[in-house]
Length: 445
Image (cartoon, rainbow, N blue to C red; front, side, top):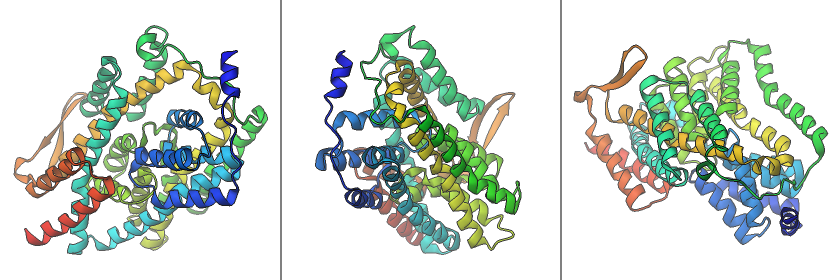
């Protein structure tokens, strides 16, 4: 009874015209720098505090659901709130405007990267950007760890996840799924650690029934995979454009924990197995993604761009690269619309399930371990010109050539750490500053 009263007492959704919402979503899409945390904070300030289009409880309600999903939670949150305000067209506009401006900027930067790597000015810019990446990743680790480590058990989960990835080369999806299962199974056994329950109502704001849900599933699965099927039909199942669609479609199903966690899998597969790009180029892509509006997960677009650039036939490299970038972004972001339009009507039911919340808590702890592995991986390739892996049986460990230590990269990285961790500069400000210093170091030293 109390739950029903609480739910009915929630403020009614205000009447907002689609034109008003479109203008606000456009501004958010053009100015949403700073990664998922900054973007979610920006939406909260604009939509809850300033415009009052959605109340605090409903905003957090939507955010909790989006956090449970694979893929970019900030884009999914924009899609969900757009759907709340104006149905499917509102969700489409909010979600697309959150991504498209950044994707266009990222494509332009990737072209500059491809054509300008041998130009000293451009090389210096990217060298400086790369030195900011390590500090950015550590800042994200500290932020997430503060939220995730509610008990020493979660610290242990993070340490185990790091060890599995670093020393046993465990598949990233299995680590994530295993942690989720631990949280789900352990919740009834240790409710004081994993959560004792929730009084959230299981009602939904909009519920068109299971028929609407099934229609959304069929429609959006078709929309998601249609470009991949067309590429396979026109270019063949083994062409790089088709392969990118299949690979990032699979990644979209398992990319829990945001862009930094996803990069651990990319580091294993796109770099080590498929050879689409080098570890240094991956770090460059992350630096580029940090300078654009929109989700940090746009780093995947840089991967698709370079993969298609180097395997362009029957197209020219620029055209192939553009198609590869578009296919990658499509496969990365299109599933988000499926998750929202099919799942949002039943969101309350999912949020009220305390065992799913416990699974999410364990996955969040794993993300800290995954990101720590990512930081170690980036650090090795940034600070040393030569690194390798030694192995005995299933056990492996990294080795470096001390003579290849790059003191310039170490110096700039240390400065980036001070700017981020001590002076609390914004991410975009840090990246742009380090880009300028990278040029100065390359020309002066």
